[in-house]
Length: 98
Image (tube, rainbow, N blue to C red):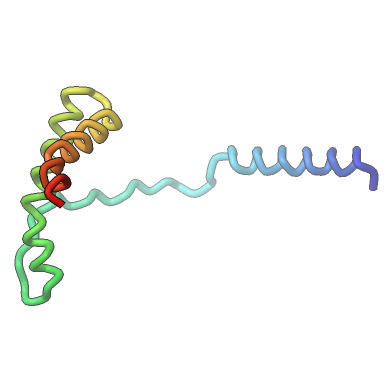
């Protein structure tokens, strides 16, 4: 096979792959089931549930802060960066004492 033939076959395979990927599915789409709302963890007998119960207020504070920053900026990426910077500023004192 010549180089031109191999190039033509590769191009044909690429076109077939693109057409196959862009074609619509034949099956009927099923909408996903909605997720239940998040609720705080409850302490239990195992250590993991106790740790998750202790972490719940920290998570809620960070999540509320992230939502607040997202509402202020209108961009979740900027909100994540600002929350990261705020956490770093809060942790400067413990870093220095170390």
